[in-house]
Length: 239
Image (cartoon, rainbow, N blue to C red):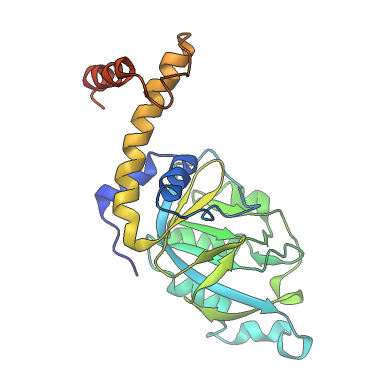
């Protein structure tokens, strides 16, 4: 599991997924925003943590009866109990929300165990209850049927696809009110540092645009006076 420094974690907690995606694009990474996944509880602070994954395959009826949950090593149950504190549980549900990836009891267990969040490209059952929990949760849409009807839990902590994005164990998941971005672990520190710088600049630009300034020469800062104004703004605001 990736050891995420507190400095980097704090930096990512204060930036948007839009800014993270731009920092990733500068490094040639174009497809790092999980598609069609939205927060159930968008009022919570940013979700930040390394990915711990579970992969589902299509269910086969003779292998996926309700009795499989009696096995304490059933992959879904085992994954929930093994996901490390501070990590984000990420489900590969093949973008199929016709059956739930998990429900409120399992998500509550992840919350109580100190996990940083939960993401699926499928759906959660008990969505209204999950929306009231103090753990960031992202899914495509609510889904009442149990996962067993369509999904068979198979592999724990392996590379997966989630919402058309490759997620490797230990990749850093960042979620905000818009959605979830995936940062390769090897570059997370530099991406977090740049995202903080970008956020400061964009806050300055927003302030100037609200005051009536044109974006030409300001965003991007191609005029020397814009660069000078930003530096003065940073000193004045301690940014």
